[in-house]
Image (cartoon, rainbow, N blue to C red; front, side):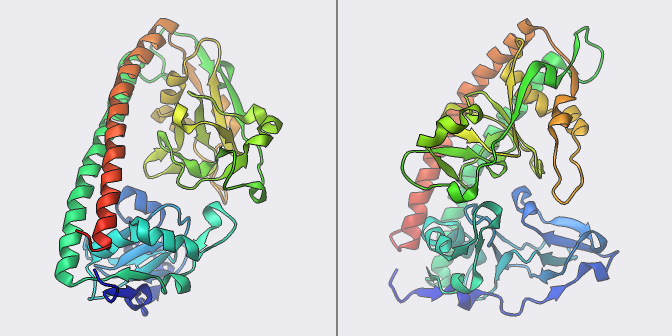
Length: 390
């Protein structure tokens, strides 16, 4: 691909997208492409009265790029899913042009080559306050081969991405199997029917909330440990793409907030996303790490297993108990967590559960290793495609 076959992204941006205030149409149902909806893969279907501010009007085939929390690569294509009006939040940069294939452009926008340039356009102090500046994004040049070549590259990358999606789906099925084993052995621990003692979660776990680390003291290099914030906790896993770090030399000052393998973590602010409750368990690969304010760490005591705690927090009965407080920032309090009451199964049954989960974890590790290899191959394929080497 020659140097001449490039284009500045500003030439592909939608200059006159238009806007609408859904509150003026309270009974109309809209398809809303919001940032939170991205993880579900589907726009929100909501009445105008439930949408709090004016939104961009978008069209089928538009390509959206999130300018907030830019470490997380969010780009999707507006699809023709209904006859409803389609709108998007202002945090999306909208691209619209008949010079580019939407699928090709989406692959470019989530690729490594573009992402390194994209991160140079970012301003803000960290985390959810980081934002890319559209005026700077507009100056980034991307490869733009012929339309036929765009379709060829997009098709190749779509097929490779589909294989990765199947592997991720397989991992999700293993999570479902774990849940089924839990219910088979214990039923719903919050309900009666078992001749087991009734306890509060706070009686059988040690609960600690994190330390108020100051963002201006974060560092990016040297001897560092990871800081586990709410942004790093996703349903049933930790994600370090939005990484903040602390100097290793200062760990003794906050040693009480160190994480250990098996710890159960719960995001206390904005605790739910489309995938579910933001609760995860620490693995060896996540360490060393420190606990940050507004994240709860639970450790077992009195013979309770951490694996049981982790699955317990994923039960609908816990979700119903810990409905987040509806304030400016929905949150769960330590009191909510500690007060959850359930029937404590015997240690022998817990050990049986842990043994079965260990077998599933072995298979899960194999699948994750396979997915890691596939991700590496995909990155290589993507790199070559956008450099004209395929």
